[in-house]
Length: 101
Image 1: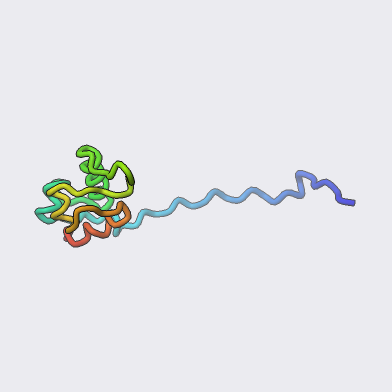
Image 2: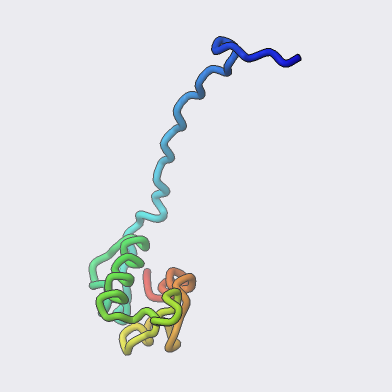
């Protein structure tokens, strides 16, 4: 016959989880080359900000494929960066690596 557990038998509450420290490598400002600067500006930015500004440009110019929103149809500026007419959103961060220092 099973007995009901009392409140005092319950495990003590766990301590709140520690907040993770940000990775400084992600926040390091990178200088875009001329092709990328035409889209995101020429000021040094962290990689995360570069990707965010690319998404602002993509959405402002309606460059997502209407049939599959994961694909981006490159215009003249983005073709210079990507090197092909259409890229997947998953390739986006990797393709900008060649265009930053």
